[in-house]
Length: 515
Length: 99
Image (tube, rainbow over all chains, first blue to last red; front, top):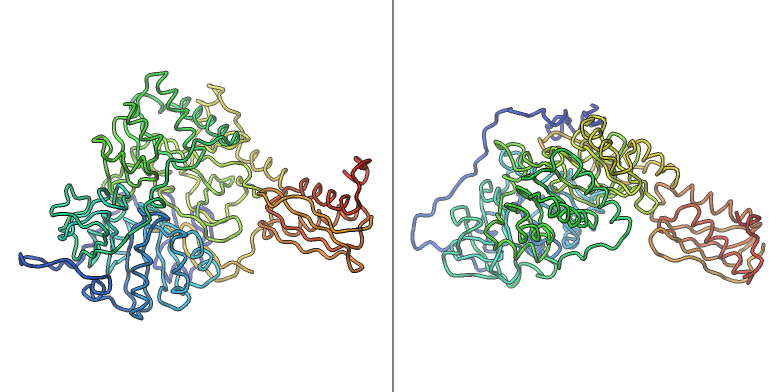
């Protein structure tokens, strides 16, 4: 069946997953559902101890079994030690057919590949995967379908009960013996624990893993003791310098600076740029540079931001320190500055659900004026691909891309015309992760294209005469004139993964790569 | 042109390619690796073959490690390698064999 972004979703996949093809952004608007709730084992005895001596004991007490689903957060990013540590113990216990439901997986998790090959891990659900796991999935090594879903989509899958987590492992920079968890105060801090909040609400068992046990109560708790079954103390939960790297140096790449300047011009010349506007941006060089150049214009014109949200970085925290933004809402800290800035009283932690879950009564992304995003590829239908490389190998993550793109009033995607020889503006993206209906403006180093369904934005930019405006087809043609028309990547028949839309329908499928 | 001695041109930087030419075994033997082989493999082979043809190279072992170079870069690197293998540093035939 062809879905709303023109992708063929084979019937066998619809049957296997019980899912519908993507039918447009608002298909599930207002459709009621009952929230899933897990079984709770009450603790009343005041002598009950939640401390377990090691991960093995935690697994035994949580009745770890073949075919179970375990979950993790990725706040420790490339410095994470928790996923591998727990999976190694599961492997040692000889458990099989495990579903690994992580919020995201990266190169830090390369050591899991042998567990995929030997049938320990047979399903993976994540925002995306980088490194060797992505290669393994693309080469057909994972037994079942990999499911890639956005940060908001993941929360939806837990609260609807589509994903039932048996044991959630929450790496916590600090914990007390009763399970009050915080993202700060320890040896390996990540600032926030936003992604795990829903696991605390929906998993059958919740195990906190920490390397810094602190006196009770560890307060204010980011995740409450009322959700936590066991607490396990280990030597190290992460590698601090890889969890939060130093702030990225402002780029000196002229191409990125030019795109940043175009992006800033687009923001300040569209109607939402007024006092109290809201804004989210990413960690790419051009995104960071555009935040810096935007800051200057805000100062000049006396315009302040109402809120900034998202994965936060130093330039966003600088806005707060300068009094240029009323509040920051934090789901993920990308650098050391963001981790330490959470101590500012106007820097608030929010859950991934409040941030982006499409199935609650309104998430923060819905209140965004601008979001600045990057993309591996954008096609002439404005569809974006952020998960599968142009060579057909899974290599990225949806993150909050589809969530913020749908939510924001003005979604700007920054994408250089060429990534090496690969035309990033193309006729058809390799895999659709964010539908074109969510994307309003594409900024490249060769010009800016406005989605034809936003004539209002095009008019504003034409009037301002601030950036070279082109059609998306013109940009694609310019790219192809330089690189030549790329051959479509050859895939095998087997489908190894699905790209899930925010609402749980199928946006696209990922096929096995042909060698 | 004959390949008199092994010669190299280019780098392994992104958007470049490294071309090595060596005396051949009676024909052109091309060993190509490329970061964009899936999308541009045939096109890269074609550009290399055309460039060698224009330089009248018919007997060479050619090794190309491509990091996503554009056609113009690939041509230039092949030409440079071939001229270096002949020790030619002056009177390069711009506009002739080199286009």
